[in-house]
Length: 108
Image (tube, rainbow, N blue to C red; front, side, top):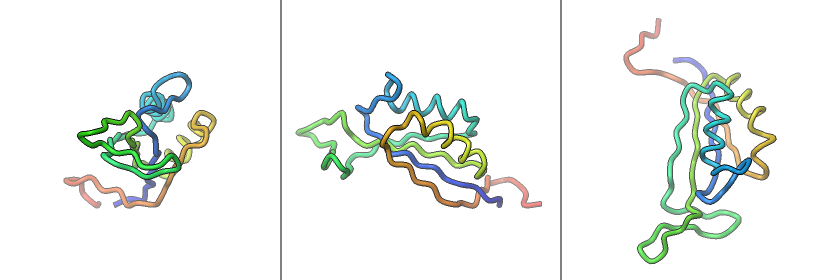
């Protein structure tokens, strides 16, 4: 295993960054930063500064939470944050240390 860092960015489906849907803009910025892998997850419910956003049968919201998550070398994550920071406005980011292991690889 090797040391890494996880980056998570909290968005909603209706967010826009630089005139584009936020998810698309963030993925473009991650690509520019050279991150090796990024995953976007659509949440079914969330509670934030604008209240509760939920996917229910009665209300299909376009403000459902999206989580953008990347795991890479700490330097790569820090570089990505530096590139993204001017574009993200007042959005929430979280980082934490991780151990990176790809199954099937030798520890040697």
